[in-house]
Image (cartoon, rainbow, N blue to C red; front, side, top):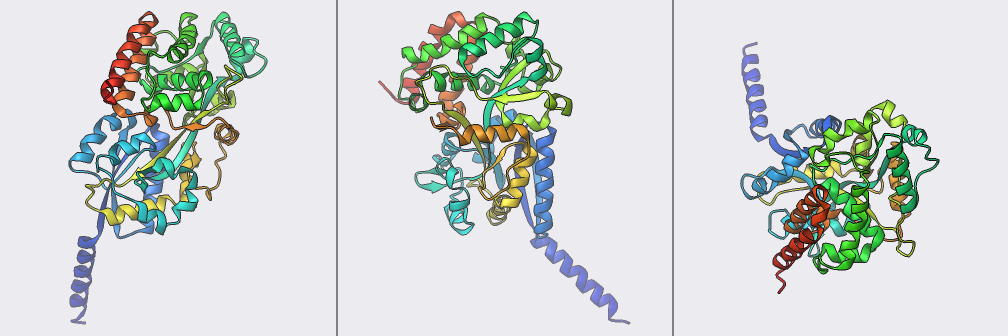
Length: 411
């Protein structure tokens, strides 16, 4: 009987020792809306249950704020895991030595086959610095009830049909297009698709790579097509006063008929709105141009300055599992990066998957993910100026051309 207190003390000492050696994993997670946060919270809880020796500490940061704060995290006291964007956005930090090389993880975890289609945007100079989590398609959300009210019989497949649909909606007292231009990347979606449809994928990527002047007549042609929509007042009034979050009620309440947005928007729509929502591919403008799409991919990264890289790698391996990646995609309304994961059941995500699966003209990441950050930032500021005053187009393009020469060190 006298030995029991000693045994208890020994047990307590063991538990304290275990606690002292338990890993603490700092995760910084960007999210859009409560639905996305809830999905990440659930998956992190599952990870802790599967790894009881690891305690996850999570900082959830709204996506626009996250973009601003990320550089300072990576260059100072970095978290152990971040979620970010594939392509040039990822390469920007890999180039500066701020992300951990994950090439051995790709070999060890079977990611070379499971994430084969996304290996290139996960790589920089032949090494992998990201683990893809999900990707999403882009297209036009539309209210079926408002189309019917305006007498629109089918989804517009051509630019002329699209303009006619806008005309009918406006005549019926309905704003044809909602856009939250205060978040400048929502405007970039319009530039991407107009450029891809007018000039094609090869030209678009050359422009993204800084190889084409912004004073080129083909670039101006894109803005002139865009200007038609502005001049005819097919966008909501004062689009720069709305963010993506604040503009959605206009669509949900039936005050605006369409939104150009990624499939990630779908899970957050109320059930009644979703029942009235369709989704179609951005219309054809030039039949000689093969249709290309934006297919933006998301990823997880380990900062080079992370203090707990072993548990960070465990977390990436966990999220990368087909079953877990499938849960993430289903909850966020995207497509799973892991080709062995089940496809989501969301109807908009399914249409998006078909759009990307049938694309023959190429798949881009997205305007600010395909381009050097400084150039992308200036480009999107220019789009905001353009929306405010289209008459200043030549001035805007000249400024962008001067920026291009400076950023890419051109004479």
